Length: 114
Image (cartoon, rainbow, N blue to C red; front, side, top):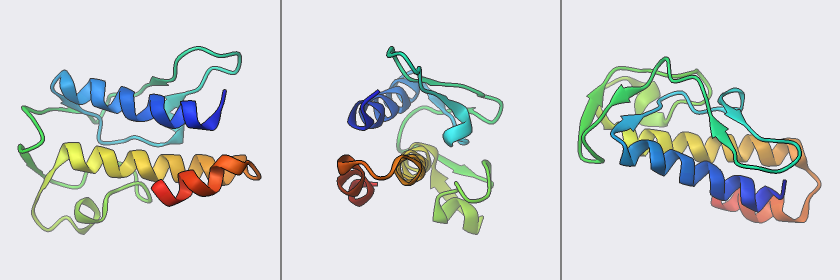
């Protein structure tokens, strides 16, 4: 599967989750399934997910995996948007995927975006 397609599908899947009132809170490589022979990426393991009303809803408490937590979540010093936290972990996951897939010409551009 092309790396750009994986990146697009990851962000679209995360958006789908948010549009349906959920925040995953533990996005990482181990929680995405990328089909080897094509098809659509899937996000799995919703054990730490929470219901959210939207991007403006705030949450308190560090939930997720160390190393994948958004800085504000890792600091555990107040309220944060779970939607923004998920978007940050999408970028972190994409960064890790790019580093594993090197050398691909798309990696440098995707790393800048992540």
